[in-house]
Length: 464
Length: 47
Image (cartoon, rainbow over all chains, first blue to last red; front, side, top):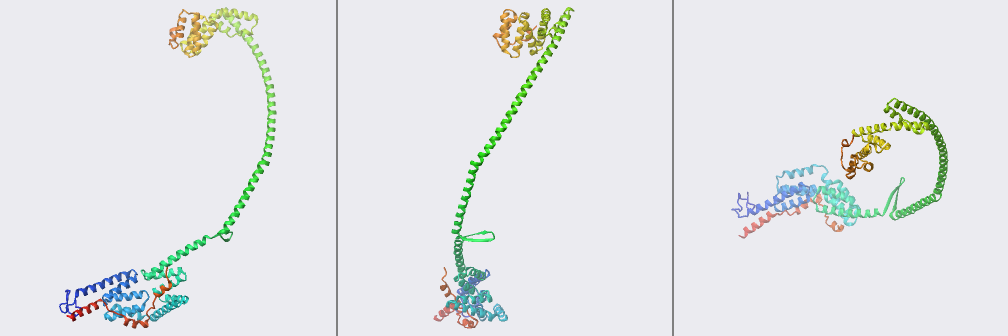
């Protein structure tokens, strides 16, 4: 490295031993310049042109021979539409460092584009003229000029900002917002642009709130194909009238219902009553007819029954006489058992006086055998524990002769009742046995059963 | 709230091509190294 004072080679020393200059401080200054350059480069890469310009200017204030920083500064000016400033930086850069290929290229491109520089110069003049118009109060002319400037030099950020300011002043916030968005795309961190955007947003918010309030004052609705717009007050008034109409309709309905209830319903009820009365009368007539028919039929049935009974009696008379003769014949032949069976088939009441005498005589003769037969059957059923059948036979015996076999039939009948849980009938039989035969075995056993209601006695022990 | 008139004052005319040469000449290109040079020179002179 050479000394910035005397040009002597100082190597890595911090002090020039030739002239005594502070090399370290010089190095620090140059280093700081490059730091600012790097910062400017980073900002330019993210479209923060304003920030980049600020950093690059700082870089050049530290070290004016930082050619890269100056060339980049020119590019930044070019980017925001300030071509003359860009040209100035590149020219200075070229003057400070002759071997400067980047600056040469930029200048060559500008010069090689036919009509470009005059055109840009024209836009700059128009921009300056617009500023004059604004200051003189001719905003409309200023807007016209600025529109031309932007159409010819789309990157001219200051023109965007000035036109946006005019739109804001004219309350054309949407247009202003559009311009500011375009400016923000070119230079994203320009404080003026950001401040105007906030202003536009704030104004738009206020405007929308006002519109909403205004909108709320009117009501619109479709009436067929027409859209009716009316004030809220008128709309409410119309609704109130609709309410009155609704009330009238409801009142009409109520009156109609009352008329129906007081006039039509009673008539319908009367008609229904008449209809019911007629129906009842018709039914009564039918009932009377049916009753008379029933009586006639009953009389007919009674007559038929009488005829039938007369016929049966006639038949029974003949049968009874036949059975009586049969019994008489079997008894005469010595077959008492057959005679007993036949005489039991005879109906005594249908017989004549002679027949009844003959029946009594024969029956008295055959009675012991008949009773013995029932008693034996009863015993058999009792042994087989068929107590229902035994009861039938023993009862027949007892009805004929309750003393039969010293009260055995009566006791066994009671025992059958006991075994079939007919306690009252059983007790009645046992008491009668005790009354008739208190000292024989049937009477003693009956006493036991009477005394101890739950005594169990095997039927075989007492049956015969 | 932006004051239009105040805001308008911030806008200055842009440099036209015809003014470029004058602008370059008017530029003060002095940097910190120049100041250091002058300071060092002054120090050396006094010595």
